[in-house]
Length: 124
Image 1 (tube, helix red, strand yellow):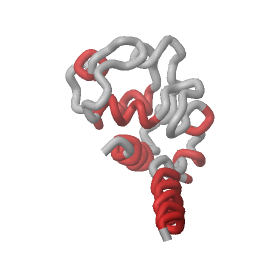
Image 2: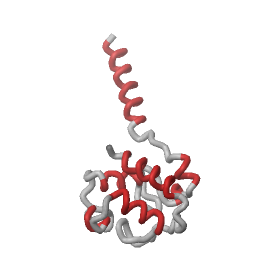
Image 3: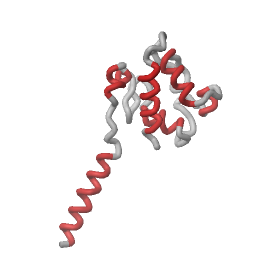
Image 4: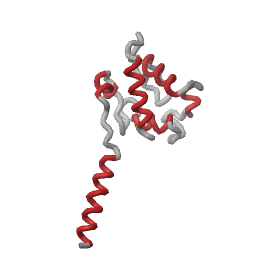
């Protein structure tokens, strides 16, 4: 009986542990090519989205480039800053490799806002 209970507890732990990072890259991110440079749980070219989420949710003190939230955003609201950064690109907050321009015309604003909400929700 004791071995059976231990097996049940072990199986439940594996199931719960496996679902902790079970977030998948949203279809919208794949459609817009975000997965070319980003992954949820590891750095590719750009930072892992989990690190971005932790940073802007106050769970990570500095970016890999050593910037605080205030330094990274220039004092702007997080969502507003990220919308501009994703749309117009830029570099410096997570390293020297620039983020490409993704929406110079502003036509993808709704998609970008949805992706920002997803990313910021990862670490909550």
